[in-house]
Image 1 (cartoon, rainbow, N blue to C red):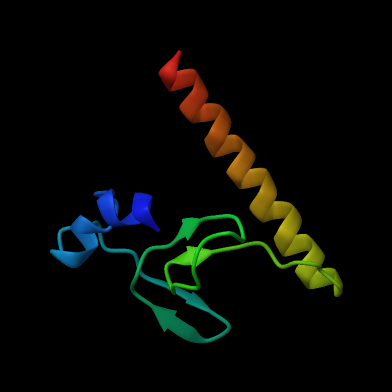
Image 2: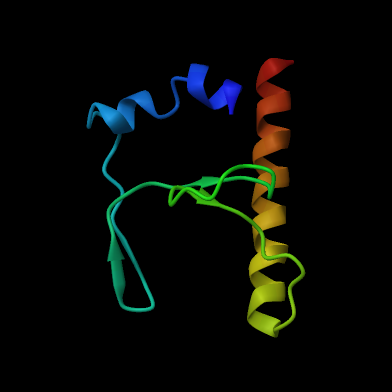
Length: 82
């Protein structure tokens, strides 16, 4: 939590300067962006975490895709740092 308090990630959201992000899931409309996180972070609406343990086929697929995208993003950041 200490890292989140000091991070500027949410400052743009707070000041309404973040890029607009509109999407629909299962008929529900959303207008807030989201970030992919692991299960150790708090339950905030903007944090999307994997389903642990995934039981149903949809939950398994979601968790597989979530982990895949997180790995891709991690690789991209390591390449940019290099």
